[in-house]
Amino acid sequence: MDFRIFNLGLIDFKKAWQFQKEIFKEIKNDSFNGALILCQHYPVITVGRQATTENIKVSRTELKNRGIHMYGIERGGGVTYHGPGQLIAYPVLNLNYLKKDIHFFLRQLEELAIELLSDFGIKGLRYKGLTGVWIDKSCPFLNNAYDSSEKGLDKQKIVSIGIAIRNWITFHGMSINVKKDDLDNFSLIKPCGMDIEMTSLESILHRDIEIDDIKNNLILKFRNRLNWTA
Image (cartoon, rainbow, N blue to C red; front, top):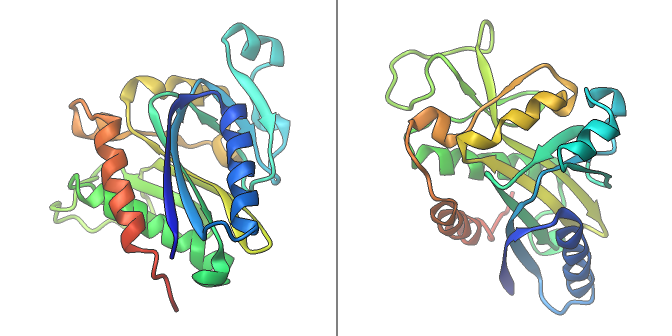
C-alpha cells in the first residue's frame, strides 16, 4: 500500500481542511492509496453533521473576541474544539484497499488511540454508542487493580473522533488531548452534545509531554495497522 505522511505543524484549520481535500483528490485519482496528515490547530470550533449550534454556549461575538473561529464541516459527530495543545490526525485512506466498513474503521481508530495511551500506562476505554476514547478519572492507569464498569464511572474524554467518507475514502479523523493548558476552551461548548469533562495526557501524568514524541509513536501505529482486514 502506498501510504504517505504529511506533517503540517501548527496550521489554521481552514488551510488544513483544504489540504485534506487536495489529498483526497489525489487518492481518488489513484496517485497513492492513503495518507496520514498530522497537525495542530489554532483555536477553532468545528460543528459536525449531527451537531446543533445550541451546543455552543457562547455567542459568535464572544468566540471572535477570544480569537476562536467556527466552521460547519462534513464529518460526523457533534461540536468539538481544537487547539495547539492537541495532536490532530487526519487519515485519508481508500478503504477499498483495507476494508469497506465504516464502523470497523471507527473502532480501529479507537483501538489505535487506546494502544497509544497504553504506552504511557494509561487505560483507554470505549463505550457502546460513544465514539472516542475515555478514561476513568478515579483509576486511569493500567496497573490499577480496580476494574471499573460503565455504571458509576467517572468518565473523562481524552480522544475525539469524527470522520467523513466519500467513495470509500476517509477524511477528517481524531484529536488527542496532550497539553493540560489547552482544555479551558472546551467549557465553551458541549462536546459531542454531552455534558462531559475533557482531560489530557499531561493532566493524567502530571508531567510535560512533547507533541512531536506522540507524532512519531502514532505514525508507527498507523503503519502497523495498514493491513486492516476482517
